[in-house]
Image (cartoon, rainbow, N blue to C red; front, side):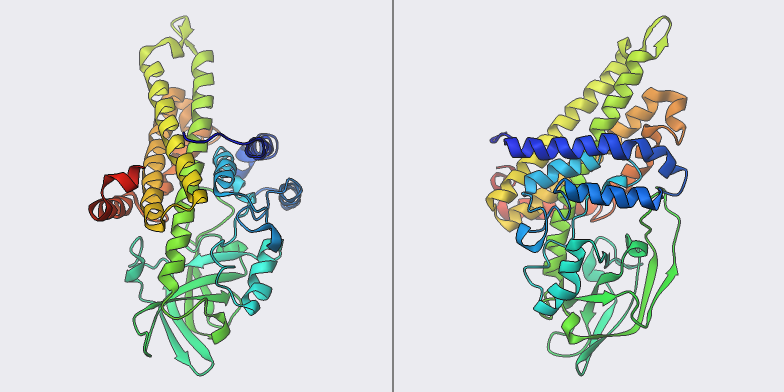
Length: 391
């Protein structure tokens, strides 16, 4: 590392860690057995507690009502949220940080500021049945009609839509001088023509669902267009960079929790009169896990520090892919080893390793699969060489 954590960094890290340990981890099994849902009143108290800690809207500027954390500080918080299962850590909110820079006054007043205040909630409607990691394959359309746009398309995996009141809808422009270009719109989910097709069951148990939503001849005012026609992919790429970095951070937190829990079990569990941690097979699994965690954490923290320093955006793009790729693959290996160390217990839903074994699998898929990350990294390597990517 070329930096050290400041006193403020440590305070933020400790506050998030203590909150996770005291308020979230004790509720994991309850959430697991209830589809990810906990008592609504408890959740309201948690939201209020996060705000009292000064960690709400952690990626938003203080002048807009957010916590104003640096990228590194957000990574420190996200690591701690990664230590808890069932997405209970999502109580630490991070609205669309790219939006205030391009939002109109109307959009700021209608959606951005209320979301920062916690009075409104967003979701992303981008992925489609035949367009996953390659967003350019989307078939949704936006057609200008006077002072409105007409939006059509069916979106998959709209995460948190059941908890949201508006969506960011990405489409290709149909007609006009920007035909075929991408555009991004804010759409209130109670707008006529928006309907939930179905809500599939997923491997994990999250209170946040991922429904399939149809947008059928949905009319929205021109004022709902974010930025300009043709800007859609630019905003999506910025969101991807942020999400990939925070996924890497959460994976580091998950791996740390798994190593702690599996290590404690291995030291306490005896077989043949001695702790199983004394067996080389178990010891090597833990040694490999902590070594890989250290490497992933170094990569993730260094990247966050470089983002704060303003490193070139294209370099950021490649490094965010590198961090997500390495950390998500690492955490999945650690989860697999933890299940093996716990043995039969590791196959029980009440066990942390079982839950993480299921939950971490999606981190190799969403916000771009591992294979897509490798394509991005290889492309940047060919264009820029080793030096810019590795520092």
